[in-house]
Image (cartoon, rainbow, N blue to C red):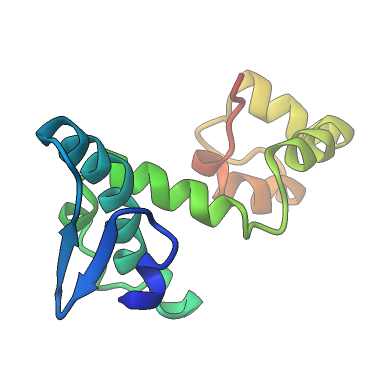
Length: 127
């Protein structure tokens, strides 16, 4: 816990509690909002990559929108590709580009499209 909270001003780890030392209630609320979310997110990050997609994942535990957004931001830094790389690759692939832009058919029309069709719900255009 000490290592996780190191460097955050006005925060000290004491046993399993976090003690904030601030002057006013307003500063207390602001400090909690700014820093506790970070500690909470870090405590939820899986210890290994295998745990990230564990079949026992309970979506209710990830219900806090702010926690989920912070986790996504943290994980995006580690992604091997970026949205720009995906966009550029899609632009070069005429078949994939056609179906991402115009939509997928209910049944896969050609065998060479099968690998795309299987993942069609995961492919979209975002602006």
